[in-house]
Length: 472
Image 1: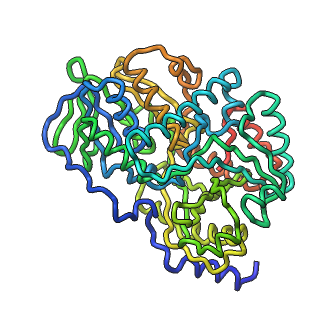
Image 2: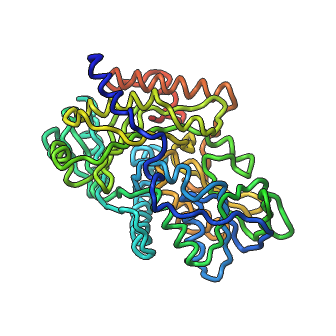
Image 3: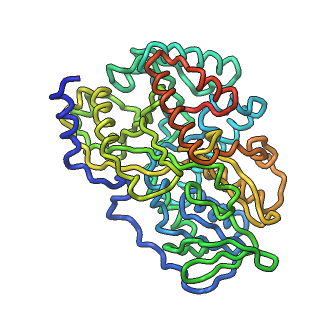
């Protein structure tokens, strides 16, 4: 690339604020007060992201008389739930390929449950009047290399034979560019019903309001410090108080789990995104995008991108950064070298948008597990339940995880708790330095595969055989 082009791309970042666009909202609600007393309740929910919010909401909808408390260490939606791309997918398995490889005997049931879960999210948004820019637009998985186009066509044919391609359409180069005009697009798979776009922070804030209206007592700036048995129930200590509960649901995801043995199952991986200024009508017309689908490319190191309600483009992904030791720290949320890389990739995809500026640039930690989709379990003789490991696809799947946790706490056998996906755990990550070394080698191998026509080296093939093959 020419130095002048690189300089122009970097200049596009000159006014970008290092904070999540979604959270930079004058309508952001005030936090609820911190807990400063002792509380008792039937159910304590720890964590004020989607996982905890859906758990509290569904608990009250299932049993309105149940006494529910939710505690959040900072503010509702401030972490992954307010920093993601706003892709709300039906998939519970981090995509159909991952689900088919891991649970082939259950995949039709998993697809059905995922579709019902997305319908339930849409219904809850309407029922509770949550203004979160919900759009059932679907998503296009685009190919930017000839081998990717061939793989997408072959995958569509295979899934159609298996009865798994309903509402999914293969698009050749001309058809995909009629939807979104990029010179890099060579084919696409359009899942018309399986993904919705939304404003992620507004969803979290709306769920919080709905919980409060149903009688959930929400305390923000109230980190849960310890979890211990107390009589017939459990007790959680906070900085200024304590909560005693009959049952506890843990929705802390990327943050250290209060059940210590669960911690080795997840590592934090940092993801980054840019948001443009609103596009003018002429600029928007230059790329088409009339159907407003979410998009993602097919490389191992992939990008995801979508339009906001005010016609900005969110452009994220590619780099996936694992910090040595698996620490979650605020300084990792900002990474200018990744922003520069993403800006260059953006203008390569959409050269007709040269001159567009970015207004926001941010990052955040994703709770990643070795099977790349959520796992579940209980502790303390069934009085505590947890769900974690959504690996970047939790906007929709966390609602399903909430139902699983509530089923487990009730001791009920349901179509969810009978799933092999729910009954079995992923492999834990090894201790350092092995975790960092393995993840670094995998990232290097994935980049080589992208540069060599998708050919996976011995390391990746070995990871595939062990059920650990993954992309960025």
